[in-house]
Image (cartoon, rainbow, N blue to C red; front, side, top):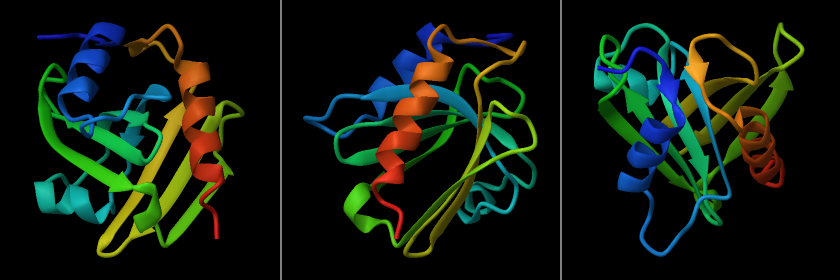
Length: 140
């Protein structure tokens, strides 16, 4: 059982659910915040950790188990052309970004932070930037 979120687990989990023929342009860890409709379908009532990736065409989220972050609890894959709404704003901390997005019945609220002691992700800041830049183009 992993004690910290880490690059090895992030790569393995995101690669398992990567859409066929696509490659990741950016990866980071994040927190799916309570109220995310898809999380409620998974049975999660509070914030949960996740690994997030963007490919050329898709936002991919590996939702982690609450008590054992070394396992995927669920996945969310949303093609960019299916987004109806995307909002990215700064959070309470200077290094935090809050992403709100909607695609059909799926609504997500995702928090990304580029500094933390609970994760051992080497390129978190670059991954966050790649994810935000990819989604910034989708804002309507």
